[in-house]
Length: 108
Image 1 (cartoon, rainbow, N blue to C red):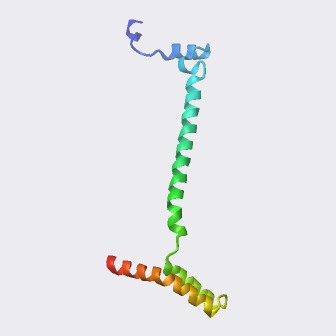
Image 2 (cartoon, rainbow, N blue to C red):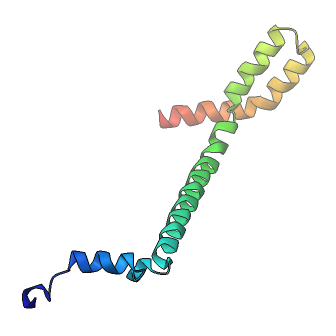
Image 3 (spheres, rainbow, N blue to C red):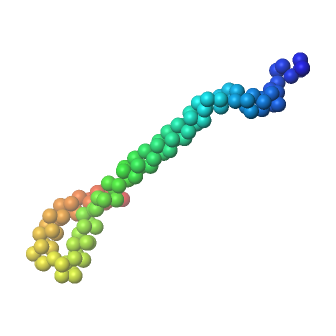
């Protein structure tokens, strides 16, 4: 038995578990802590997913002036906009279109 003093005795450990003396497992604290750790990880993963999604949304929603102009041009050709409405929209978007074109020429 002297040699077993530094080693874990598997049979004795199983005996303790069977009698309800399971150390960390005895009162369920370890299991409860593990469950809360998993819940915390799931919440953190969900929060990270939502932050990533929210940060990428504005890029998708913002339409460039050239894209808007193409949409209005199509609406005009389908008869959904009058000539007067289309001219007014074109006038409002002209400055933005010019800025986009100048920006692309400078970077490209």
